[in-house]
Image (tube, rainbow, N blue to C red):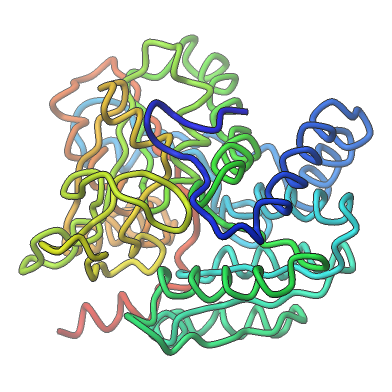
Length: 387
């Protein structure tokens, strides 16, 4: 379990959190080698989560692209409607293993909060979720889902009132309650060992893509595309494919047309420390964390997981940004062509894949990780259409 990914990663945290992080790393190392833990994880992934998710040939979307075939890895069909379930289940089982009766989490789009609330209910753990007021307004359906699942949703009214501030609030809570509480971080960010743990639980996505691609078209894909905010679905997609010949693209949020950087930290950021880890961070001229803009709450984060930073520098993964208007176009393409309402997060990746399909040409295979469904984004999409 690497502490650093090249120069990135580490654990820049208050001394009071060091024992908790050490305990978590030890518990995870023990769990990985425990057949009973792995068996329980597989069982609940199947019977509660609904894995494996299918690899779907989007024939109509392929015709729109006019070239390479486009396949969708249907993480939107996981219980709760997003890839977030994979990590929430794994960390929930770790919390129970460590004897921590309380879960706290942060959420932007709400899908991680919903997944944590579901796992808390299933495992008998009390759950509290921090969420910025801006995100609570634009993701109201998920707020109600969390409450119905028995979680307490705590509004965050400081800063930009989005995901960054929700993480800050959750970290403050964890510092004060570390003996009884597990902080279930939702993305591949934060201090070691969180980026490695989250990536490990999410790597089920890439392992399934590898097996399903071999069955569906006899080889690895030519291109695999995933959206990147903090980066959990993308790193889970990429990790098992790094040694294949597949090109890998991570698609960030470029924000509205008038935004200089949107929320694209790998495209426009610089190395800095955020939430206990060294990675690429959007910063102003004074080195302070910059405000972000994105139509997608789940991508509206000024940093990114440290493993992505390493992959960017190495050139193994290409990272690019897609604007709000193009993500909205792709949302409608997938809805009208395939009868699938995607979350706005993977709509960014869908746009990049469709645009690239013609250039790649026929006989090539593109896989897009459809990381979540779009129920939560309907109000945002409808408002955008009315403007």
